[in-house]
Length: 281
Length: 282
Image (cartoon, helix red, strand yellow):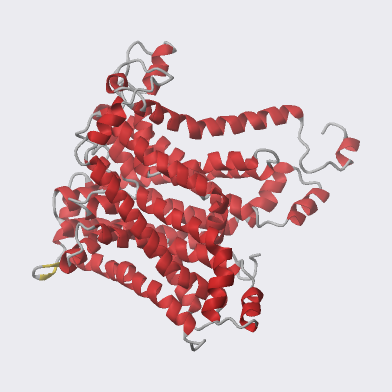
């Protein structure tokens, strides 16, 4: 076989697949949103924006991402630093830390439902401690902020692991000599973290932030499990338009909104955390 | 550091005071509890009878009553949904490795024009909310007759899994020295024989791990599954659509059914977790 053609032959299936199932649907989603029976139309966009749940869903989704991603970053940095310093039981603790990574977001929602529902474990704990007399109905539309907090905790619980794994992998690439050198110059653990770990971790931080922020805008099943439609979020509304209202054009317009926010965030993180060429390891 | 003379004495990097050590381990225990206790609550609920699930206050140790799980398994559509989940996940596994592994091999062994463009295409897929592509794909599938089929959903799940399959297999193949292959060639093997007899045995564990990872991605996916399947719902789609109408014990048993296989999968691939995500950086 011709050796020059071989790599292209090997790449062909994956490339064709991505063209058909990734690039083409991308074009198609815009077509679906803006082309009606009579050519170009903004009807779908108007219907979407006029819906009374649209702006709340934008607000909830963005707010959730803005709170959960920084918290996760800090928590993942703590967990990754702990793991990096471990000598004994490293693998066991690492495995435990990474467990939520393998769980479905729907499962995570149901797990936190077990805690927050009226006969759940949080109420059991509060009553047995004597904090309240009888169980509270946490997940109701009257106090939707509790649903928000529950979703926040579930997301924090579920998706911090992925950030941590990326950071642990990144920390493994930092040469030991850098720490030794910093120590020779009298840098304490905190200083070493600030002056060596953080700057060297920039590429990993960038990857983790991009992946996590995009995933945070996709929050859906956790919200469905904990609050149903009481707490509107973008993907939840998209699903509603597609599945319950059967308005695929409006659903496509919603998808475009999510895509636009995601791309904007990706570009933002690519610029802000840019590593100059040649500065990587 | 009260004494300046003390500060000048070099200390090993890992040396920590005993109070610090206690705090450090307390933190570790706390973080482990933060991860494990919620899962325990779910499993505890799944192992309680339906009456106990809604009773108050909760017992901290389950009664190991199989009532909830039996109810779940005998509930209409559950067994079919479980079957569909497995079928879709197996198809995803085969498709993503089938498409991804050759690409990973090509990236690890050859320098060719267009290599960077391909890498960019693969990396780009990770910067987009892929499940949303299920919306246009749903229309596409109706046209070609793939709507509401296991294969159709598996194709969408493959888009989610393929970037991982390519990057993971790339790093696994890159770990096998080219010299081994070259030695096989000089001993009379052709390219395919050398690959099958020398490279394949070495990479098989890693390929298996990435296959399991693909399986898990599909097993856990909710949005695309819920949008693309109606009659052939997967377990996640089934659970999502019955959230508002099903009793609590059904939801908890269903949640446990989702969680337990995933725990096993993650345990099986734990060694490769960092190879998988570490390479995702560059």
